Length: 258
Ligand SMILES: [Zn+2]
Image (cartoon, rainbow, N blue to C red; front, top):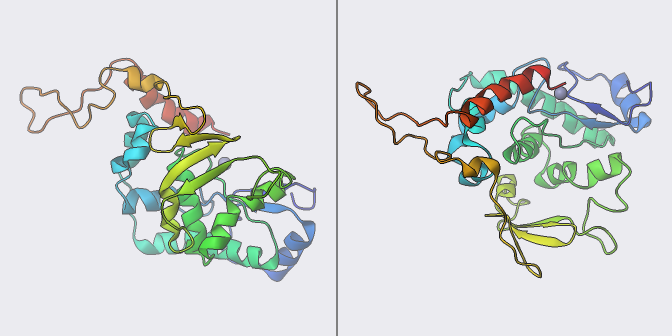
């Protein structure tokens, strides 16, 4: 694909060692690299690291902006692995992308649509697991992809004359990359939103409308309020129509995503 002149390579190279001929070819081609460690070829996908090590369903903001069925279906039934599976998996891929980055290849953050919102953060964090500094990892989500797509004249960094698309954080991600999660404001094309609720603020204050799943009576009713006779613990009350739709939609995406 590099020899064919592709602009970017999507997904990681599914091999453990990148030899010097590949390094030189890649560097001189100016083809960029979007490894999507979250879905890692040649080993277990990086997303499972975060299901294993964090309680994803307890992330309040993620749950606010995502139908709870989507998060529950992916995160509550965990695949638990010994750590070396990750070390020999997406972390090894991350070490390779660090080598490519050091050689001059543009590396880009791409979260593959596994889980909107937090997925992009995981991908940035996984960049650092292979040795990138927080600053290098942040560039994979900002100026690098802008350059890769030829859009760095308009987006990708804070400069006079560029579009006003930016995030304001409460904590410094250069000190701790996990601080990318603490977003105070989101500005899209010059319009300012409070990231907590995504109500527009600033010059045009306006509360957001509800997401479709927020209209369901039982949208946030898990863990449950519905007691059934004979059950030891409470069970969740699943919305009868929309809940099932979401439950079935997720595997369909997995099968036919691309
Ligand atoms: Zn893919």
